[in-house]
Image (cartoon, rainbow, N blue to C red):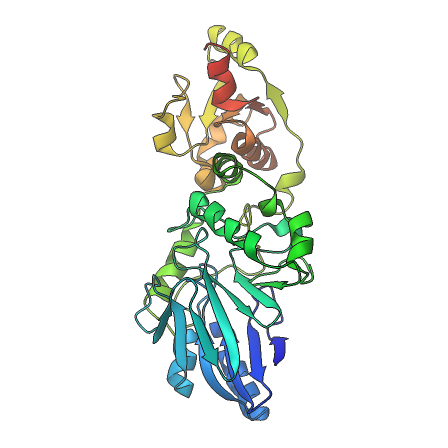
Length: 357
């Protein structure tokens, strides 16, 4: 078979051609390049038989529906895909024999509920279920995402050979496809963790979903063929964990305060002190509880809502979360926005409770 990546940007679209009869399959097409795909098929005299989406995309409008209508090809997605224009629905372990080639589908939810990975030849097309190297994988905080499901999906990779070459649906930083064996060494998502450890790892990293991504999902649910059906920002690593963060935020250094130090500071009076808990609202009512008087701004809303905190620009701000990871991100966001006196509750509410507070 012939195998080629078609797009000039971070979204990856793969063309798979059977050399027997020049029949072709396109995986994860982007509506912005719809005309380009049709022109390529015509120039190379290829007959498109199938278009496949590995999942419902949140950062671009799929060209799957438009290509199906333009060419009469089959449109393939997982059985859980909300899209009504899909003509072939697959389940875990299904094998489609297409153009003399075997396409093996693995159900790999986590990033979305309808995610599949595809083995064809020596290639493993992973969608957003697995990225390359330190890119990890697609974020699990979008509608339908679930880190527990993602962990279960990653377990399926243990049965696959090292020699398969990983081709994700996104690559934002010029990383090159490499073998699954190599990814087992370099990809943080493939470190050995219990399910509970993996969920904590994801929860402590996450940013809330960008509102615009929800609009893109709705457009793809509706089989939209309009490139302007949803506003989409350009050149951000949207589907990676922390991908919607402003450039440079990760490099900002922040300070920390211990639970005992913060308790003493609170007892001294809350004047010129603001506590911001960046967990989701329901977490504040969970087993770890929350500190009295804290302001709740979930991490996914902080970039926008920091504008409402202008009167606290010269005050001391302490960010709080479950164990400190999200609070560190929150402090970095605030410091970049000019809140210079922002520090982090070290160890988060876990440390607060372990200190008997």
